[in-house]
Image 1 (cartoon, one colour):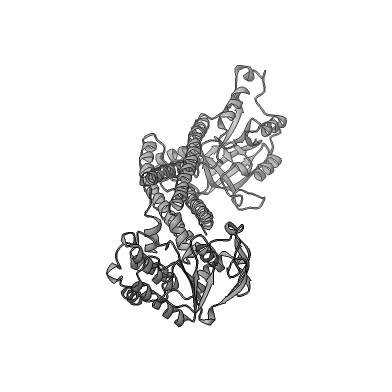
Image 2 (image 1 turned 135 degrees about the vertical axis):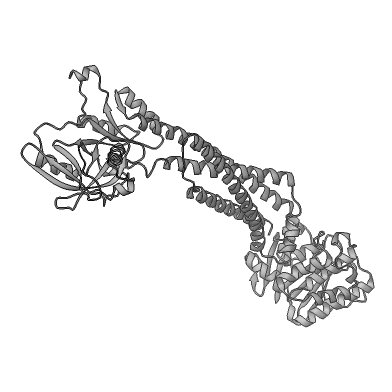
Length: 215
Length: 393
């Protein structure tokens, strides 16, 4: 899936002046088939979350044009967005968007129920890998932020995708857990021949990417 | 689906929900009851009486002056046409009487010989609760269909029991063959007659208009036929105005017709008022339930938005809310129906004590209205859920 940006500027940033390397107000394209592991690194208030939200159709307040495989995303219908969100682009939201009343396992299963990607055993295996097997039946509202982030990451992996957008997914994880989660993400992306874009404030230097974007 | 329910329906205001449910239940109970009794009251007396509903025969009051020929007791065609123009009159037609001599005789080996002078009258088919196929006659037909006064059957049965013969029911009487001897001073003719129905309202035998015309032409005694009776039917629920009209013009009808008509009119009006109140109550309580649905969607804004963001189709969520509220309304409807059956049993007993025996069955119209209100409610829920959920996409 090719994502093409043409002079895109979010409305809240329309008065800003962008440097030459910024993705805002510039023309470039991202190709998922090139096994792209992209880091979008920027300080607060530069539009990392805006970038993520625009790509999954949650925000439309921007000028310029974004195309998915040549189609302007402003012309994408609700039905097509549902298709994109379940088959082409998966997301880990910055605020995680979990259901506090459901358990860790139920939160993941809720997504898996519509995509039918993994068996229950496979999901439990994922939880085991990220060290959450004992918390599987615990309500998400009682989990720590780091634990919630791991649940959100596994949930995002429970679907086919061509791009995985991760908005500061490791902000509350220690280096060890960040590495475990990164390996999980990388392995799933390789299996699906998909690319991912990870936004971060201070990226862990032990994690390497093959491409970088700036804001 | 279980997880979806857990997410979407946990956040409920039970007090408001209970009030909406109780309100809808009471509204539906009144709706079912009022429609049922409105139908049953209007059906009351049907089948027993061959004259159509709200129909009566009127005549001018006979006074001392009219006995002395100072005032007329017959109707002109102009008068009948004026009746037809009254807004509460559905139709009015002259009742034509025989202008020849008539004798009714039994002509059946199973029934003893019996004969009696009778009067014939004829009214238009549209006033009779009898099929137009049965109510016709042409020269050469096997028999003349007749409608007999019930009093006449009582008289016949009295005669039969005194002769040591078992009495006959209305159904059996319809199988007995009669003969009519129609004559004037010079000629006479016998025609076979068969009963097709009974009436409490007319003291003479009713025959088809074609037979009356034929007999009046062939056996006229030479005297002018006067119209002394007019058959008139009032529009539904307009009986009060009709009664006032009759009083104002010095017209009268049989007391029983007036009493039953007035009773039906009053009870129908009461149930009509109750029906309007019930529809309003169902609408208001339905609106409260729909408002509750809106509130539920609003209080689950985060959950709905998140489900849509992780790829749930809006139609799955719309269906989830619609099914939930359809199920609630279905249960309310079921409870209301059971309560209605209890109320119906009690009210029917009260009517029975009052001497009014209503048909035991449940009116199909009330079931139809219950289904219609369910469909309208489910459709409205779907519409509201769709609008609210799509806003969150």
